[in-house]
Each structure stands twice: as C-alpha cells, then as structure tokens.
Length: 619
Picture (cartoon, one colour):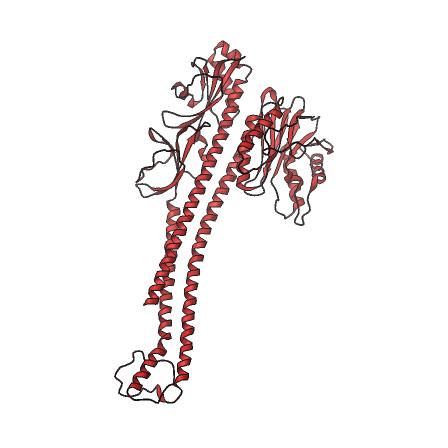
C-alpha cells in the first residue's frame, strides 16, 4: 500500500508539473503574440502616415493650388483633390481649409468628419499628424499640411484615412473588430461583436491578450492594442477578436486523451507493481510457513519449489507435499531472494519509464503548439510583406518598368519601391537588409516607409538620404543595416540621378546585348552611422538601352558544389537575355533572368533574396 500511494503521489506531481509547464508556455506565447501584433499595428500606422503624407504633399505641391485658392472655385479644388487621391490604392478622404478654418472643399465619404468639426484645427505653419475618433466611434489617421504662399500660410490640406480599412490585410482571420474609447464605451467597427460573460477592462493604454467566453458558449481570443499618435497621445484601444472555439475544443480533447493515457499507464503500473511485490514476498510466506512447522517440532524440512501456499494456515495437522525432509533449505532461500531482488529492480525501471513517457508526451504537445504558432506568424508576415511591394508599374507612358522580389525564406530582407514624383519623374528604390527572417522583414518595412517619405526630389537627394539614414539609426535596436539605391528617372530625356549606398552597381545593356557597369566611388550603407554624406551620381539611358538594378542574390547565386555565379557571369546573363529577347517587355526580361539563375543553381536551395528592377525608355 505504501508503494502504491507513493506511485500515485509521484504521478500527481508529474501531472501538476506538466500543467505548470503548460501555463508557463501559454503565458510566453501570449506575450510573444501581443508583441508581434503591436509591431504589426505600428508598421501599419507608419505605412498609412506615409501614404497620407504623400497625397497631402502632392496637393500642396500642385502648380494649380495657388490659382484655385485665389479663384475660390470649389469644383477646381475638388478636381485637384481627386487627381491626388487617385494616385494611392488606399483612397483617403481629403479637405481644404482656409486660414480662418472655413471648409473650402471636401472629397471622399469620410470628408464629412471635417464638416462635423471633429478634424478641424487651427491652421499653423507645422505639419501635424493626429488620431481622431468619429461620432460613430471609428478612429481615423489625420495629416495636416499647410499651404504656403511665400512665408504666409493661406490654407491647409487635411488627409483622413480610416484605420479599420487596413486591419483585414495586416490581421487576417478576424471575426470582429471594435474600438474602445477611454470615455464613451465600445463601438463595433466590423464583423461580429458578441456579448461576453465578463466585461472587457477599461482602456488603460496597455496591450493585452485574453480568452473570453460569449453568452452563446463561444470562446474568443481577444487582443486589445493601444492606439497612439506620433506624439504618444492615447486615443483608445483596438479590440481584435478571433473565434478559437474549435481550436480550444480540439486542445481539450487532446488533453483529455493525454490524461486518460497517463491514468491508464498509472493503473497498469500499479497492477504490475502489486504483482511484482506479491511475487517478491512469496519467499517470505514460505519462510513463515516453515517457521510455523518448525515451531511444532518438525526440524528436517526443505523446499522443493519457491511458491508458498496463497494463504498459509496457522493450524496445520500435517506436512504438505511440497515440503520434504532434507538439509538444503538454505540454498532454496538464497535462490528465492535473488528472484525477489530482480522483480523489485524491474518495478523501479518501469516507474522511470513512466516518468520519461509523460515528460516526452508533454514536450511533444508544447513543441507542436509552438511550431503551429511560428508557422502562422511566418505566413502572416509573408502576406504582409508581399502587400507592401508595388504591383502597378504603369508609372509613365515613356517608361517600361518592372520589379520582382523572390525571398529565400518565408519572408526576406530585400524590398523595392516605385512611385511618381513631380515634373513627370519616377522614383525607384531597391534595398537589401542585413540578415533574414522576421526581424529583417520588419526592418525592411520600416526602411521602405522612411525612404519613401524622405526622398521626393533629386536636387537635394543626398540630404534626403542623410535624413532617412538618421531616422533609421534612431530606431534600430538590433543594429541592422541595409544597402540601397535611390534613383530618379526622367523618361523624357533618359537622365537618371541616383545615390548608391553600398549597393550592387547598376548594369546597362544595349540592344545588341553588350553590358557595362556604372561603377561609382563607394558610399556607406544605411543604418550604421548618423550624419554621413552621400554622393549624387548621374547617367543617361540611350535609345534601346535597358537599366538593371539588382540585389546581391543575383550574382551570389550558387550551385550545390559551392560554385558562385559572380559578376561577370551575371553581366553575361543580362546581356544574353536582352540580346535574345523576342519582346522588349521588361517584365519578360526579369522572368528570363530568374530562369537563368535557376538553371545555373540547379537543385541547390536559394541562398539569398533576389530582387530585380528593370526599366527601358519607350519611344
């Protein structure tokens, strides 16, 4: 009984320890999950602020804005706003306010928010960003850009974008979205907002993840993410809901099966232990029977076998057949003692095996849950990264443009960008972040927003690169860096002004397939040291010439044997593709280059991210 009680106690300790480990892993997963979701929200807000800044800047820099403001024609103002609004996939609402605060023009469904005075602010000389909440309870990002006439501010452009519009792209699998204000309660923005059995905590600016049950029996993973503007002002909390009823039910079934398996193993072990103890103590029963016989005066007994009677009788009239007179009783007792010791050793080994089995089973469940969580996060990061890359390359009628990025893993550290700027010029950016994985992808997303928001004109491009580099150095806790080329193309003349921050030199191929490198003195990479100077370089695309910007994943492709493609071979591939191209389409050129890389590498896995930007003047 003591051994059985000890085994039950040990089993209880094992189960309690397993539950403790499960709770610990769950808390760590919740902490990591809320940290990732907060990072995704910050990335989304930074991207949206950059988009609002672009469209507001486009309105402010529009050559017609001064004349339209002088005329006071609202139709002309609306036309200027519509032209700027059509440049972005995310279509913000726009408004123009006079210096006195009067509404001159509005555009978009959400522009009524300005008319309700929720977004009206006194015109100042500063560029501002705010987060405001509409009367319906929906949060908006608002960007204010002053319109100057000389040194005098004559109006301001207000760009508004509803934050909930991008949540579905950055946070998939949501069944509901709500917004909780510090004062004013909880407002449903989209999807399902069930009635919970317990109330949500009041907004306090802290990100948290919790599991709540609804009154209809469903269970939800509820993440509350604080919403703050660039100055740190707290506006409320976004409430993200995921239905995890099925997942928790499956987990409970697996836990029940695991507990049942442990109980079965414990019961079997108890049975085996009881049998082992019974067999182990059989020699003792035989000795007791022998002593009882000797107490009655029988002194010449010996054992023929090791099994005593099941229940020895205290009052024996005769000697059983299994006992006979002999002088070898000591030898029989020694043999039985060895058998008992062996049985006890086997019982101890069975207990050790039980402990190991329970621990391995719990470890396998923890490993499976962690693997599923990592795979889901990687898939979300891959979709988000692909959504940040431009897809529409119809930038100018005089320029054929194409861009491709192929990551070596689920997410990569390469990125590219292309957008229109003033005076009919096109901006192109290609960059390669150090490292791989989620950290490199998040830093690449941040760098893409920073470079796009800072680099707008080629005249002072080195100063803009310096400002972007200072911003990256300030927010770089992992001390990552990136190489980049930022170029401004004038399709009318073929002139290209660019800054090369430690990136691969551009290649230019003629129609005959001859390739040359545009080598320039090297510049420092971005994100390492602040207040560094960069050089502005120029080149000119001639008729029929194609320009290729690429990351080092192109010329550093390698085979299974370790052979590296190299710069000379990469130039040869570019010239071959251009010379043999049946169509001048830049998209087809990019695809053919990727095919040539795959043909060279063979079955070897892709060693690094590959990014290509190809462009050519169109007659």
